[in-house]
Image (cartoon, rainbow, N blue to C red; front, side, top):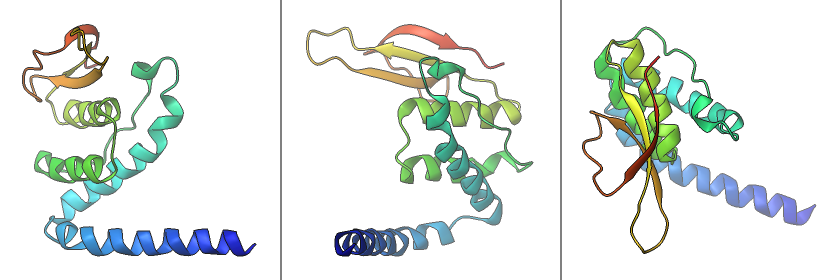
Length: 141
């Protein structure tokens, strides 16, 4: 029981440090971006359950009706929430599709002889990823 309480206390201190670190940055966001951040954080918590063997088939719920500039909140949430490149791409793809900018998700691997790496990105949004060979695509649907 004592160990459990110590663990909870450490987690609480860590949470307080995170809030102190990120709160000034969140305050710089406008209300729409904060709402987008809230939606993204919820989707980020929900996504790993849907990212099984058919990871690209995972569904992301529609965002609330917000201006497209609120994407700042989405980017902030995926950065702070330490989203994987696939989670980030799925959330941003849904955001942009609902704002009339359909981007395709590309998943590729590094064909070099070194360590194996894979990466997912939005084609046309994240810029060229020439070091990766594209294996599969998820069209904006």
